[in-house]
Image (tube, rainbow, N blue to C red; front, side, top):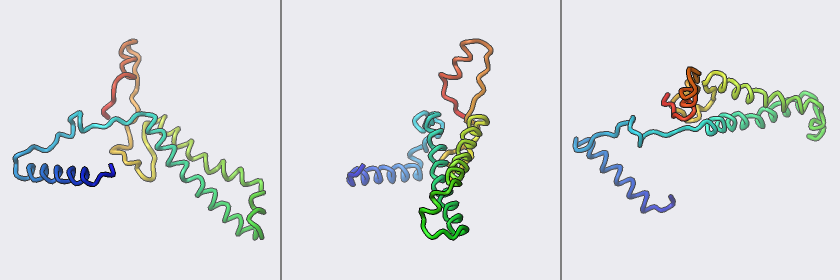
Length: 146
C-alpha cells in the first residue's frame, strides 16, 4: 500500500505484539499454523527458475561478443554481429537454462545462484505410487508439506 497511515498502524500493531510477547501476555505465532504457511505452485517455481536462468543469457552473450570483438580487432561493432558464431553463442548461453529445468524436474532439487528466496532447495517432487487408482489421484490433489 502507498498509504503512510496504514503503514504506521501496522508498525504500531507489530510493536504492540512484540511488547506483549516480551511481557508474556501473548504467545508467539506457531509457524506450523495454516495461517503462517504459503503454497508454492509448480508453475511459480518453474517460472522463477526460468527467469533467473534467462537473466544470465544476455550477459553471457555480451561477454562473448566483447571478447570476440577484442580478439578479431574489428573496427566496427557491426563486423562482429555478422559473424556466424553469434548464433552458436546464443545457443550455448541458453543451454544451461534447459539443463537447470531438466535437473529440477528429474530430481526435485533447485540449482540457483540466488536461492530464489526459498526456504528449501530440495524435495520439490513427490513420487506418485500407483498402488490403486484413488491413491494415485490423491497425489495430485494434495498439498505437499515437504
